[in-house]
Image (cartoon, rainbow, N blue to C red; front, side, top):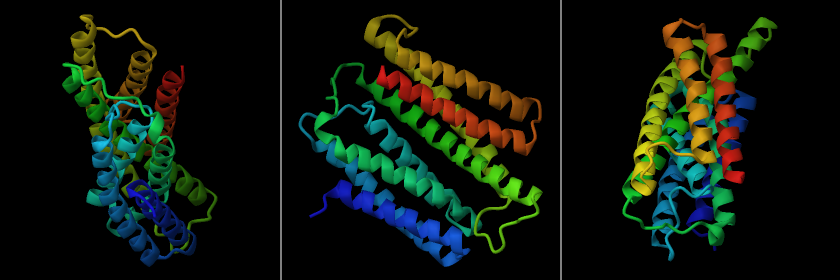
Length: 261
């Protein structure tokens, strides 16, 4: 019998399949089915965190396998709340596979999760993880919108538009990019700030000196450049889309590399 993790992964996998069929066949009905399955997956996904809370010992919220699951959950919730109507629902083709992989990886490594220290500074730790994960989730959505923007733009330039496409228009993708970049960067910034307070409470030093902190600050600096380019210099939609894809790729590499070392 499937447990809560297996059911969640199954819902996300089914959503990914439905979204892929919807895109390949230009079928709005399939993308609507994918949206419903994503909503079901989000509900079950919330249950996985409750199940983690009940484990003994209770896993750390900042575990390298818990964080991607949290990021994916926030991305799915954002999609269900703001992107699930009309052609914007086509973004499910990127969000559903990401959510499936995050839950599948977590389910496969449950016994090896790091235990929560339960220290007095845990509140700062949890706030740092939650804000950073939420920021990364929205920056991931911005990167996904940027990727689809680039692909659609290229096909239009080649005079091969996607007939009957259920994907968002270029204008809609650019708006998604702008909103997610602005809010995601704000949340990531708050995550960095709370990380400083967490470090201060834990070690007495306000500035962290570990690889994870260095990678996070480097990623924040990259996004600062992107934000200045988009909102300060007036960067165009296509360069902004390229920047969103590159920025999120570097963010993932920095975080994953620091976690592996």
